[in-house]
Image 1 (cartoon, rainbow, N blue to C red):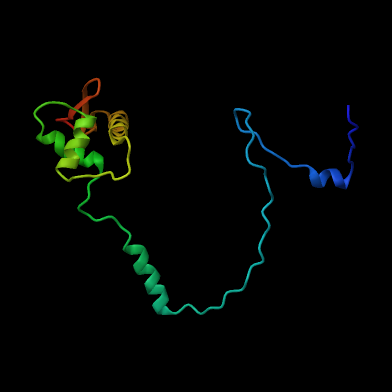
Image 2 (image 1 turned 180 degrees about the vertical axis):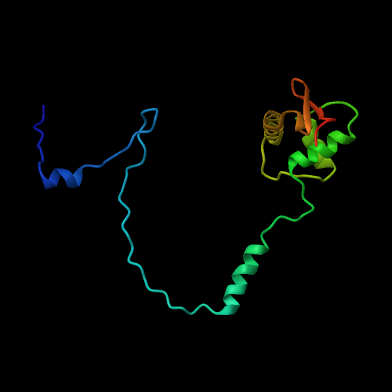
Length: 144
């Protein structure tokens, strides 16, 4: 066996890395203390024109009023449907009718399913949807 040298005091503290463990016992990235950066004094050189420019930038990022949420699109589609529909069929219809689109969503039908169930649970009889059978929804005639 090789002899191991043991460090003590300040030398030991400087070489020791602290790690945290997650809930499952796996190690997370080593923790480091964030160094505070010195605060610089900012001159009051903000003019009125720059204030209005920043306001314009924040107000132009709103969604267009013509875009519907997937739940609102589902209400329109189910109103026109003659029978209960699945969430997958509702999402396909919303895409075909250009009521709603999800460019990056992988499972929008699962999101719609969860949102409809959440609305039914929270609003009860005032919900816009009713669950007819497993995976099939229709419009609630007594809902808003």
